[in-house]
Length: 468
Image (cartoon, rainbow, N blue to C red; front, side, top):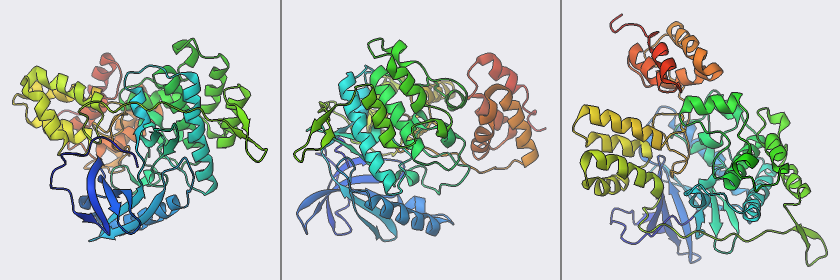
């Protein structure tokens, strides 16, 4: 697990121990739990300890959830590779699970993407090559990551890359079971089949690796949609942006590589990590060198590690917090910065941060404006305000709850929405139905996913009258 910032000054609220490990600091926080820096006295080494919030275990299906969690972690423990953060142990304390992992001192790849500037081609290829080597090993062990993204890729000081959360990402979503019909992953990096909740395999990981490479080389992701509906529609129906138009310095041959890497049908993509590596090698972007035993091995370029931002809060994206401060200061004045930082230390996700901050705004109109702007700041998610690309939370899932609505009514809503968003309407209706209390609220929630104001207004006219 990576070092996420300075751990000095952590409050005494930290647990003294987790299992047999002494807790010495805080590395990060998320919707699912906390990540602590720990010390293993038995062999005198530092470890990262990922804990799970107890509140996530208070459900009827908690026993099934825990059993699936155990299986996933055991699978991750089989992934022993120089480019994978190693899982050492799974344990439970007072009924709450925790995972003990290798502690690596590095920076997340997302730190490179804060200023949205393209990375030099050699460095970007060196990073993705190591990611692909990690994926190839994991896939050979039968482990699919399902949430490859810059936040799960760690850059070490010596230029080595480590991929974290293998086998764990499936459960690092909203604290519940993942089922057929639920989308698993972080939306900006999800393959088309993930959006529709289908079972995924290694090719979804390779798709995500293609998205990461595209973003490193251009500064943006291949689909530009901001809201959940717009992003999902583009991924399912539109062609990705052209890398060489965004960055004319790139070799033209890369466009063909991205067409294959980001193909909508899994059968048309790279089928194995080694095939993706071979494609880079054929473009002469990957070089080989002679090893000590006379064999040839792929040469890996070292990558310069970015410095952590000054005053960064562990587990939070500084750019997202800065944007939140700028929005809130318009309503609350200079106290906004202190309020944002204080609240961020008490909550586990951008969604919770936005909710807590909105409650501090006295006027209803101002509060609604703030909430709308926060949705844009942490956009590109599937549920509510979600986690955003740069947050420390691991993703989102689509709820299958139907709430207070019958199936016939929801089918009508689906047809109304499909006129603007296409097949993804079914997924969005299921998600929104679990949160809305009235038909009018349901239509209002769904209207937010429609890109144009005119279409939103027309769609809202289809809503039944209040009390009808």
